[in-house]
Image (cartoon, rainbow, N blue to C red):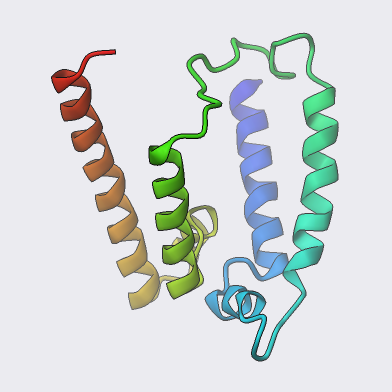
Amino acid sequence: MKAAAALAFGVLFAWGLGISGMSRPEVVLGFLDILGDWNPALMFVMGSAVPIYMAAWFARVGKRPLLGGPAPKGARHDLDGRMFAGAALFGVGWGLCGICPGPALTLLGRPSAGGLLFLACMLCGMLLYRVVDARRAGANPA
């Protein structure tokens, strides 16, 4: 049941990204270009995503996710330098190329040199984070 739900929601997510234009870097860059030829279309994506997320959040059964299983443990809620640095790096990367990590995976459906380069860089960044974080944890155990 969980696998079928995950597949269904993944397909729905990818479909929504495609319909909304989030998988097209030129649409995303057009939204980010507020001083130039601004394209406000992605506001509708956010405007529809927020109420859906809020409904799912409030529909939780206690502290358990709706489809069962334990809630993820260890989520951090503090605002620290790592969080701000990660958010800045994410924002700069997104703003430079117009590709967000979620929609980047949909680019595998129509591969391009730029999309594949972005995916390779994203995977290298994820690996680098794991290596640096593991070394940091080993040097300074919490």
